[in-house]
Amino acid sequence: MAEEILILHGWQNRRPEGHWQRWLAEELASRGVSVRYPQLPEPDAPVLDEWLDAVESELQATDAASLTVVAHSLGCLLWLAYLARRGERGEVGAVARRVVLVAPAAPDVLSGIPEIAAFARFGEPGALPVAHADAVLERGVVVASADDPFCPAGADIVYATPFDLDYVAVEDGGHLTMDDGYGPFPLVLELATR
Image (cartoon, rainbow, N blue to C red):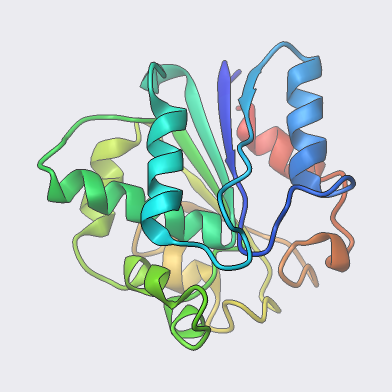
């Protein structure tokens, strides 16, 4: 079982009561898992560098072998941006045991939303799959729905295949938010604690 979990929320998420991420954090903490679930700065108008600094702060003094990262939507692109930043600095080696990317937003969708367009380039094909493989010790997973409006081409095609991640489909799940009916989300709990 994972000993530490870092949960990265997405755009416009102020960690509301009832959201599956808050439920996940509480459920894990009740099981004795060390949970980090930071409120990222300015969630309605995120500044990429500020979000990256927040991730780096959360990862200080973390043992990669014990950490699972669970990210949703824009949080998935934040994770990939963090890996790109490490690569630009010439940093190598593992930073997490496993990742669970939930409903990652597609770069072509992000690029059309001015508030979050700066994140789009980190979901595009390139060297990131190699950086991801170097940074994560175990094979990760993408959890998504085929009817997600933020990834209409399918997260299996956009993320799971290029990053060599497992893919778990959620039928009729939309973007896997509270509005789509996702408060408690046992599937993500199971995947995060493997």
